[in-house]
Amino acid sequence: MNRPLDPGDPDRFRAVRLLDVLIPTRNRPAELAVTLAGLGGNDVPGTDTFGVVVSDQSDGDPPWTQPAVAAAVRVLRHRGRPVLLTRHLPRRGLAEQRAFLLDQSAARYVLYLDDDVWLEPGALARMLAAIEELGCGFVGNAVHGLSYIDDVRAETHRHYRSEEH
Image 1 (cartoon, rainbow, N blue to C red):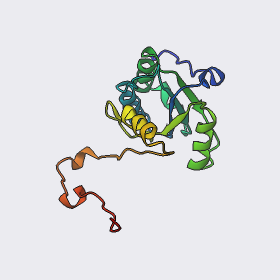
Image 2: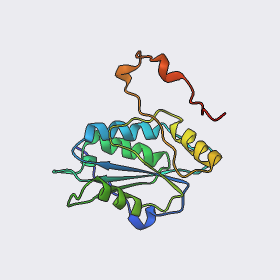
Image 3: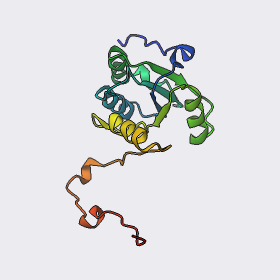
Image 4: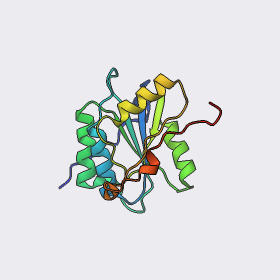
């Protein structure tokens, strides 16, 4: 039996934080569980915490009714991460889903994270350090499929150099 999971209070979630991770999902509870578990392994030095918002548009029950997703949410909350679980229906496309997610946050920075991406430990800290050091409006982190871990392409390891130098 899976114990009921509190979805969280949107008004209490909307606190001023440095970072919120925004995750749209639909019909992929196993993948979402892995994504949330990866966030559980991330820390952001120099900050109290980061928040996580999940916006579900599944056809059936929300994914947090599944034991693996509920466990990952409980781990995040146990580690001091506020987690807000939302249902956002009817579906109106990914752009509208992301706008809804953004409306849930009051954080200085947000990271849109697909529900099937595992972030290695330290990824959030590296992205925050980059955006603050560079003073820019956007940074990213390349997604690497581990099935291609031995696929090394030397030509992609060259650095870009402007011809104007």
